Image (cartoon, rainbow, N blue to C red; front, side, top):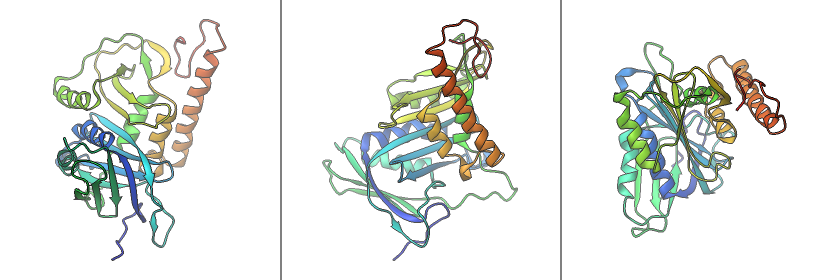
Length: 296
């Protein structure tokens, strides 16, 4: 039976990933989901299979925090196309409890690789080479997001992207709200630590993994950080390939504001990258970065 494909997923995708990458990604991202009553789809985790770039992305947010995990795909079969060009940029939504079932099923099984089969309604994970080879778990996706009051979907990727563009604060002293510590602890446990920086915008950014190559698990997450310094080091919290990957995950392919905003986002990253390269050859003191302030 040919599956009925949802908007943004017009082909059945089959791929293989490292089990430890997917499990760590789920554990790192799901603590940052919200509750359905908060609106904006914050109770959902968006899962995007990017066949062309050979990666699977998980995106979550609860408005106060947002997290994105990029899982490299080791193998990807040719998608089973239907009647349109393959496009998985919108992805599917799953509940955090549903995704956590995957981590529970393949915990302590010696599984090194998982085969993922994704349709418009389900994500199926199968043990390829562990103690229980062939064991399979299938979870069902949520329906398409719709809010009767007209509330827009909260874009977790855009939230992280904005913090990436904020300049790093000169002083590292800041306060993380007590009610957010448990979520960050869970992310730290999943990643084996919590490498973070504070920005002048009263935010913290966690940037972990293969940020330059994207060949391994990569996690970017952002949240509130009170009391950060307004003085800037003159460099953005994060730039490079990981930031470009976030742009690919923006809902509907564009940030709020449409195409002009998308062009502005790309222009910002280009400006940041050009400025950083300039610093390697320009030793003059007092130069200002793209955000103002002294260059590092």
